[in-house]
Image 1 (cartoon, rainbow, N blue to C red):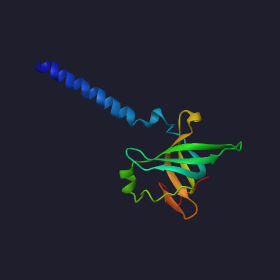
Image 2 (cartoon, rainbow, N blue to C red):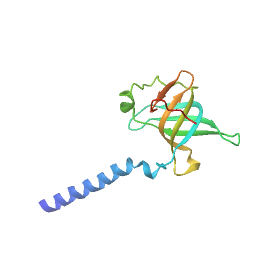
Image 3 (tube, helix red, strand yellow):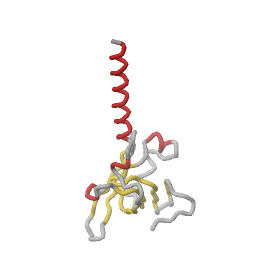
Image 4 (cartoon, helix red, strand yellow):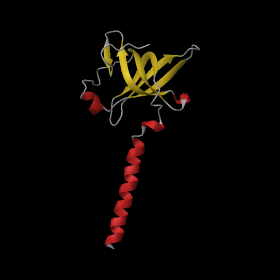
Length: 132
C-alpha cells in the first residue's frame, strides 16, 4: 500500500510538473529568436497575474486595422518595476517590440519592450535603444 501511494504521488508530481512547464513554455507560442515592432493605439489593458496583456490596434501595410494581443509580465512583476494599472491609458500611442506568435493569424506578440513617444516612457528598453 505504501509503495502504491508513493508511486501515485510521484506520478502526480510528474504530471503537474509537466503542466507547469508547458504553461510557461513561450517557445510553443512565440518565435523567440525573432523580433518585430508594432505601433498603434492602446485599446485594452489587462493588468493581472500570471501574465498581463495589452491590446493595440495597428494599421497594417495594406491599410487594414488589426488588433494585436501583446503578452506582458504579471502584475506583481511589473509592480516591482514601477508599472501600475495607471501607467498606460486607453488611447495611448505605443511602439512595442516583441517576439511574434508562431501563428501569424493570431496577431500575438510577447513583449520585449514598450515605448510611449508622447512622454518618452519606456519599459524593457536598454539605455540608448531606439526602435525602427
